[in-house]
Length: 264
Image 1 (cartoon, rainbow, N blue to C red):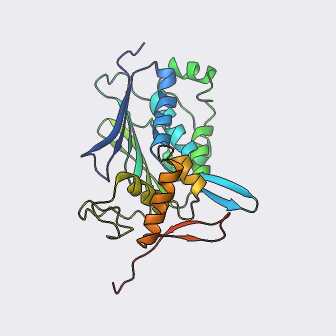
Image 2: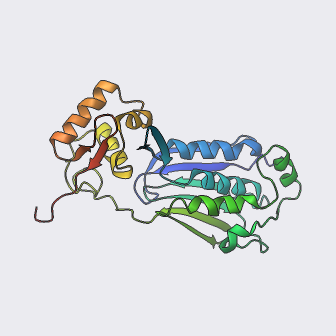
Image 3: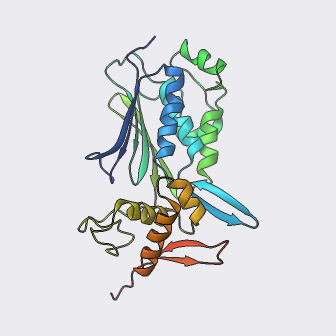
C-alpha cells in the first residue's frame, strides 16, 4: 500500500538548501517512516549537558518530543492522493522544518494546540497507526507539542500552508548566522579561527557555541568519532587561541565561547 510514499530527509549546510551535509530517502513501509526520520533528526542536532547538584542533566537543543510528534502527524495525515509529493524533513543551522503533502484539516486549529483536537484525513490508516501506538486519536499530540515548547523559550514554532502542503518549523530565536570569512567557523567566534582549522575543531566550536557550559564527557558523547586524545589536543588549541575557555571546578565546570571585545 502506498509504495510511492516516502520521506526525504536532509541536513543542509548553513541556513539555505544550497549544499547538503547529509541526506536520506526513507522508502520503508509507512509504519516505520516516522521513526526513521526522527532518528535522522537526532543524528544532526546537538545534545548538551548541565550539572544540577550531583546529577548531570542532558538536554537537546530542540524540543525533540514535539518534533517527533510533528513528523508522525506528517506521515499519518499526509494527503496520499498527491502522489508526486513527499514528506520532507530538513535540518538547517537555524531550524528544523517538516513539510507534509496536503493542507491542514479545516477542523484543526494549530493556534489552539492545548485544546486536544483530533481528526484524521486517512480513515483507514489512522486506526492502524493507533493500534501500533504511533497515535492515540485523543488529540494529545498537539498538547504534547504545546507543553514541550514551554520548556524551550528559545525555540519558536511557525506553521503555514504552502501550495498544497503544510509546513511546520522549529526556529531558533537568537540564532547568529555564520560568517563566511576565509572558511572560518561560525559568526559567534567572529574570525577567531581562520580557514586552516580542520573540521574536527569546527565541530567542537559549533557544539560549545550552541551548548555553553558543555563538559568534556558531553562533547565526547556528541562527537564519538573524535578520540579522547585528539579531543584534548583540540580543546587545548582552542583555549590557547582564546576561542573558548573553561569555567568552574574541574569536575563540574564546562566550556564557553570567548566573546570578542568591541574595541578589537
